[in-house]
Image (cartoon, rainbow, N blue to C red; front, side, top):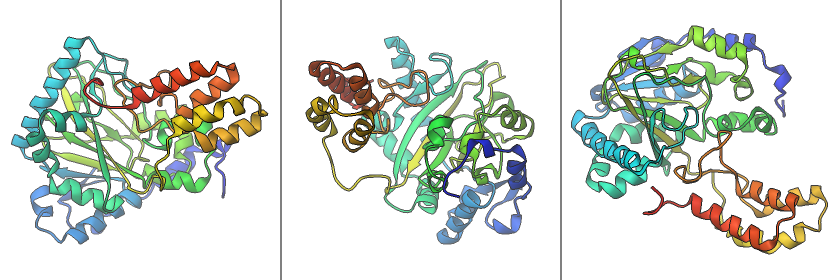
Length: 378
């Protein structure tokens, strides 16, 4: 099948994939299986053959439940030091009056620190180094992505009373609309889930009432999942059948981004549920050459105004950045969707509205500035 048709989405097909149960025999290094999820003890993993453990992780992510939990992956003193710095960043946001936008929650409802990775490295390099020296983080990243991976992180604090997310899949295709996702061939749907690994480190104890993340084990295997998760029948099934695992400070969860999941609602009275959300990316999702696409767009724009629409779209595809990420989500926030405007979107808008060249130049410059990090991007 070359193309996936949204009309072929069927809940029964997902249920067929969910019939498979997690077999403990496939995960001999796990302490036990809890709600379909292999639970690993960090101290035991550290003494095991790393290749054997990595094989189990890869099996879990691809053909198993799609998720593993590493109990005690980070020591309390390392987590506490990072938490203090992250709370400082949150306090700075509050004092500045900034409300970090979120993909799912209303700005200000929870506390979100975008690009916490860079901000922690710049603000507290010793704390950063102690945190990201973690051997199990490297072990699981290489198991799914191989070497030369890249780490990014976003800190999310769901405050008491904070509402949870709706079920979804994650980056890349999970951040696209159903209409856009359907434009990508079936093999790209399969590829998307092996380009990233999602993770979360618990920065406090997370009992069920605090709303730790909800998961649907084995759901990453449903091929049409990127076209399905917004459907009401899938959401209803997820709400009725998800699993939810309490975590302790220092525990780490890693999962296939195609796994159906959603942050839970915080029903506690006094727990500010803090997690460091890790998005680890493959080294291979990049072009071979560096290209100044802003310069190209400026040069080509007068010609675009003379071309028929089909030709315009093709030239823009060869000229501008067609993908909104990576970006600086403090300033380039997703308004009205899951992704901000791409450079190609901006160029298409300029052509459609026949902007003067000077307006496009300024818009491209502003777009580039919004995407940069630095001292002025907090």
